[in-house]
Image (cartoon, rainbow, N blue to C red; front, side):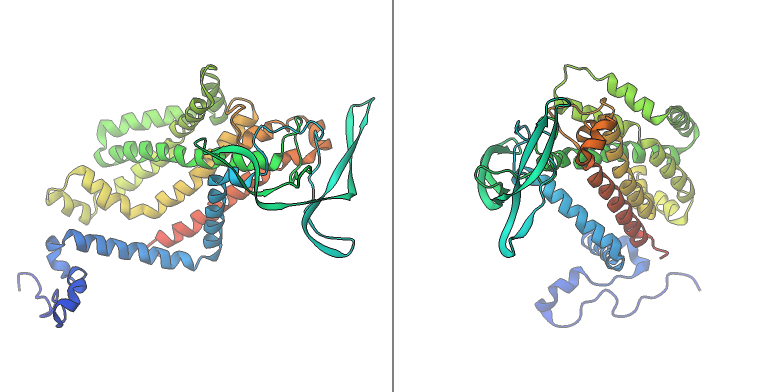
Length: 400
């Protein structure tokens, strides 16, 4: 018996009911054997269905959902950094150099007062020039909320002076202490998160464009193209990563502005991170290009770009997602390491790595341990990206 199997008599037909069922017409079931009749609207509908399945599977991974929410909260805080910081980035408190963190309290002398901090007094040792701070429980500094504080430019564009919380009039509010110049560490940590959190996305975007593009060409065409790409990858991977980062960072002109230095560091991280993804994409395309669905698309006249982008790459989306979520924390760690060594971002631009560079002296760390606090958000960010990547990989895997 030859020919195509007969379709059910009602396949592709909307149920009776007239105009009330117009929505069903665009979402009507179709005969898989008549796939060439699939409309763009139906393509979008069934693609959306796949993303819904991924979302349903991701919701069952509670750790990944929690980490995703935590990352969303961290990026929201980075967007509103000036609003969250009680002080400006360069505000100095010369009377509170290396001041310890002030604990937020609610009760004083057995009665509820509300959020407040006690004042700090210090005594200077004239022999060692070391300041010894003591908590003055007679001075209560109430924390003000949605208040007017020091003026600032939101995102460098809009003049504002409204802050989420501010110190009391004539008081101080050092939630994470101060540094060697009397600058508030919490404010600098909040504003520095904008650089440290965004540098990963920009670097991964560059890395993915290079990795998928070059690896896709090598895996799909093979031959001399694959040989040239493999030799380039082998040369790049033969260099130690950290010394290569340091050499390229040191080559950036010292006359560049902090903004250009930021883009230069991002470009360096992206250009050196694409090799692993390119090899993975190449090996996957080598295996998938001989599959029946790829051959059928080629026989139907599909272009190589469409075959790679619409048929081959979606087949290992889970691997791409896992690679992205692992590359972002690697970029953050790379920027932190370079800035810590003094070869990455430099003041006046602030990132978590720049803040950690002030804690290189072991004596400073022993006497003022709060200078090491910027390492906490780095660890939290790396862990949350890894847990979220595990959940996304499992959700995108069709065999789980």
